[in-house]
Length: 407
Picture 1: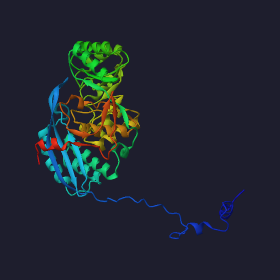
Picture 2: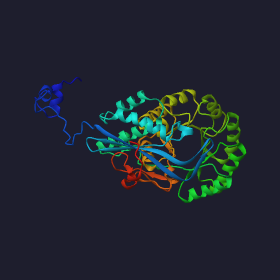
Picture 3: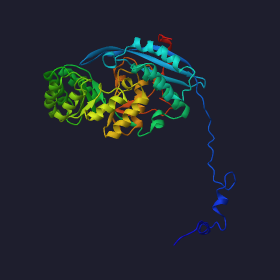
Picture 4: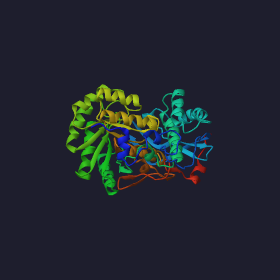
């Protein structure tokens, strides 16, 4: 049976009122959205940029297969705006991995500061694109400017950053990393991590087959079968070495192996992946979204390790996570030697996306002092996000006064 519009309104009890009567533009009978009565901030002009040397002493040298870091020589960035809103960011160069240093980061920051001054921070994509067009690489200092912009964005929205970016979760598990040590010391460090409540341990490998197997054997025997162990070779093996070593390590129930071979050798990475039972994660091979696309096309890895310092910040990191999700590859958020400021920014990224399921956000445990107020908390290996607007972390004003200002 066919019904007319008039029949519909009669059934709805609207009598002879026509649809035209209800929906004439500008008349009182037209349906209207209820306006939100919120303070409107339409322009957040960046008025000034502060950059500081941000030296963070480590409890002990952090050693991996290709390098050793004795201190974290980082860079702190603070963006000021005409609205009184301040954005905080941190660069954590790891020269052997990121290809930049504190000195090169500060040099690049001077030009980046001139690019962002006078710009509306809400146009963050435009600003980040301008920085990328101006200078390639320099991903660590780019990450600092990027996270400062996102800090401002969250504060303007009055939302913690993870909710603004997606809000997939507000807590998650992180591992605790053990750098390169003897098998005996690795076992001791593993037991200490378990006593702290961590249920996942990441152990550095990539030296030699015999020493690496001995290291992981000792760790597994110390922590027992219930603790997850993931390992990271940091490009330390050749392809044949990786295959032989990982075959021997299979019996120790390894969750995954990060970057077993050279970052430039995607074919080798794929060969390792196809030859061993332990899942392979791309780390140093993955800086940009373009890198992620090549890894996906090459079928070279099972997982993707995203780091703000490699990608250049939150915006490109989100693109990598989305590419991974589209390809069916789950992701990790990792870190360099960063304070709780940058670690918290990475945690917001992790918590915003359901496809990011692994975390290696532990470097605040390696610092003699972490001068950051607020940010994430880690208890029993579980990360809890701050609920303050933006990143929810900043440098202690007393500590800030002691820092050497670059400009």
